[in-house]
Image 1 (spheres, rainbow, N blue to C red):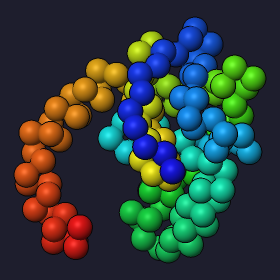
Image 2 (cartoon, rainbow, N blue to C red):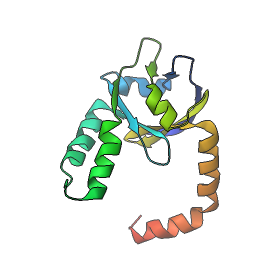
Image 3 (tube, helix red, strand yellow):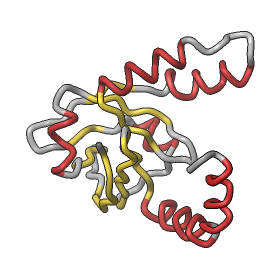
Length: 143
């Protein structure tokens, strides 16, 4: 289970140090892809396979299904954690998420999200300001 929020830096080669507490889960390999809200999603290989199966089963006759599958699957890249606990984020994904030097790695149970630090702070500020409204909408879903 991935939880927590961690600040890290990208190096000049696009390498990101994965928080120590998450490295063991990612030993078997991982997949990074375009996420939502202009961040990247990083999955264990096992979690990625579950998601990819669901995406592949979406009806290709529906344009939203095709678009979402393309966003997630075509943007995906296998990554390995090196001996120093880093993964290389491909340039096209760094550009997509506007990643510069300072990034935030946020644990969201079955995935990690990788955010540009300034975008994360803006998103978090907005979400915290709307937390009451968000909570009400979640109550409608039974949460």
